[in-house]
Image (cartoon, rainbow, N blue to C red; front, side):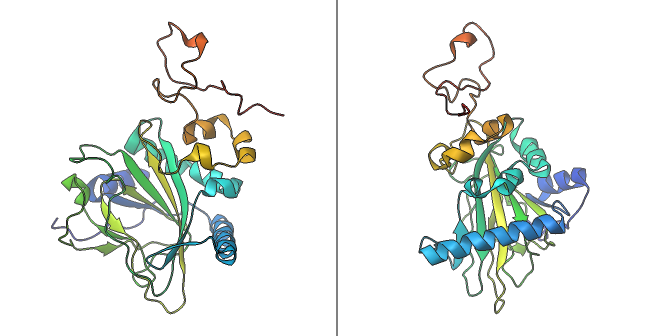
Length: 275
């Protein structure tokens, strides 16, 4: 792991994909416009403040996380199926990735650096290929002082979980509106926020291969009103479709008998029927 640096932001998606293969991380610049960033950040702040007022907030290492943003408005569903996110998820995971979770992360002053981890460390190693990956949406600029995600470059090539021996960590530096793409095998963590009062906000869109159990149990977590409004593409992204015979509802649909295809939508239980 001699190359102790990370790639710089780029608008060139092909270069970003090369960076991802080389470093285990890439930064797609200007993936969100300033208006989108402002709306998303204000929404995350309102959600987090409401959870603190309710006493339902979740704190880890001094950072606050807000889960299941799929339930929190169309803007977050749109973010989950953002063309940049799906382009890189499909490049890493194949043509049918699932949204595994959609979570806000508020990195607060006085926190502790998160433990070093890889996003697919629930999978036995050696990791011969990518099974999960993350698109980290920067709703603030990531700096060396405000708790930017830190990455151990090229550790995805080790194909294993992090060891106790800490490798050199490099902060991801990027402006607000960037999409930071992480190979599911690369070692990384939320960094230490050393500012006096600045909260760094990001949304973590975690994707997985269609044969992997999702991080969030979306079927139990989703609001029924949100579920009824899902588009066919959103249903597929959230895992409601049958994929290669997985995820059937009381068995395969009868009209699929003797048909070679075992992938597609089903409404066998009527959960998407309009009132």
